Image (tube, rainbow, N blue to C red; front, side):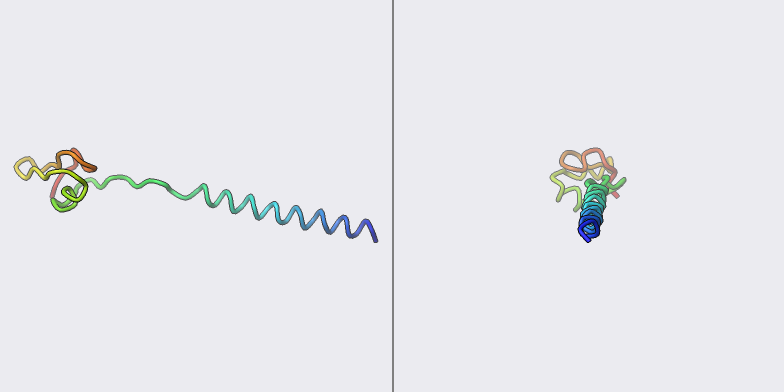
Length: 70
């Protein structure tokens, strides 16, 4: 009887530990950054802190520096 309780406790502990590891793996697998778009609108360029140079169709400065403006 005592062995049964000990065995049940070991199984329960292992099951809970497995759930914790699976949750941690799922949490770390989530992407953390997004790639910059290949082209931005003039308003997106401005919102990102840059200036849209429409003569060269490029965003200058800010988050989208060097990105094409369409």
